[in-house]
Image 1 (tube, rainbow, N blue to C red):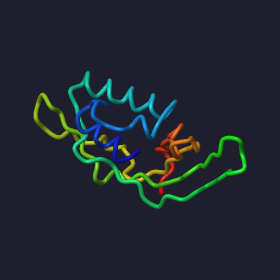
Image 2 (cartoon, helix red, strand yellow; image 1 turned 180 degrees about the horizontal axis):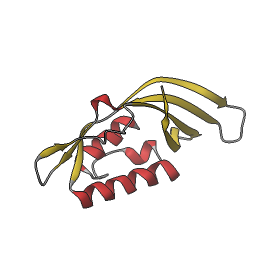
Image 3 (cartoon, rainbow, N blue to C red; image 1 turned 60 degrees about the horizontal axis):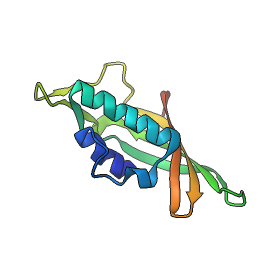
Length: 126
């Protein structure tokens, strides 16, 4: 999901990505909202944040619809937002945490695991 999300954010458009193969429901909806805001503001992301220290917080393979919850650390030190109109980098807000926790909930569908919910925890450092 992260690689396809980065492709979409780099052009503020879902077209030409396989994101719908890896994310759905809340996760995909949030990405679509982000892309609409970016397109309206004339911004793109030239360097995406990194996901590090990913661990499986829970796993239920016995359920009718198997689920997993992953936790990870989002590293914003590589994140770069760019204004396509002004042709310049937009600095992050000074209060923006550079590393924070995030949770992803996945479901096992016929074609593989898909992210249904992605929640950043901006106030929880990692």
